[in-house]
Image 1 (cartoon, rainbow, N blue to C red):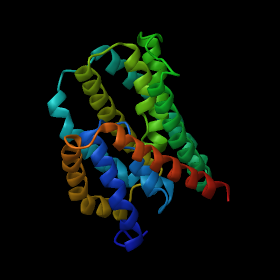
Image 2: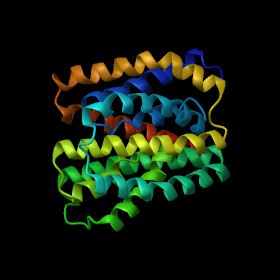
Image 3: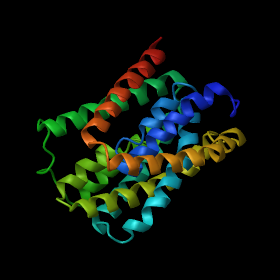
Amino acid sequence: MDPFSVQIYAAAIPAVLVAGISKGGFGSGAAFAGAVILALAVEPPVALAVMLPLLMVMDVTALPAYWRRWDPVAAVALCAGAVPGVIVAGLVFRSADPDTLRILIGAVALGFVAFQLARQSGVLDVSGLPAGRAAGWFWGCVAGFTSFVSHAGGPPAAVYLLSRGLTKETYQATTVVVFWIINMMKIGPYAWLGAFSAQTLWLDLTLIPVAVAGIGLGVWLHRRVASEWYFRVTYALLVVTGTKLIWDGLA
């Protein structure tokens, strides 16, 4: 991979901007769209490896504002459950070929959109689901798996956190700290799989300003654009890119 090629930057810049805008102004739920976009231009493991350090920079930026405001029971349960999820996902990644990974990432993207639309329309109500530690371990395991394969751990974690009836601030704080920890869990397995390289790290260094700009743009848009419009555009983007990845994987 040439980290400075026009083709790479044509996908990487919008990918990082989308992730930054999501984290900066509209919650982090759709930030994984960046990895889905980038996977159209490079091999899936490379796309995930490029996005991980940038997502961690965004996490560290947000963490101080929510320090110790999270739900400790939920945070511990989700992080504990994420450990086996990350391990299983790493083993799947080790044995799967690139086309299988494209199909998997595309399926997660389409599943994310279906989950969000069902929840927003009232078809899916998660408020009455079990909210104890065991439920947290289960949903944490699912979140660890989906976060590893596409940086999309948000929906499984949301099912558990929404069932606990948290305040908006506690919900956001718990999400920030949980995925900060899960993202750190993924560093070792990604390195073990050989996803990181000098090329991906050089690309990350050049994209840090784009990530910061994305966060700033997200804050600016948050004050001027209704979140419904942002998510409509993001969901449409995920449907198109997710479908394209599945098509490429099956071709």
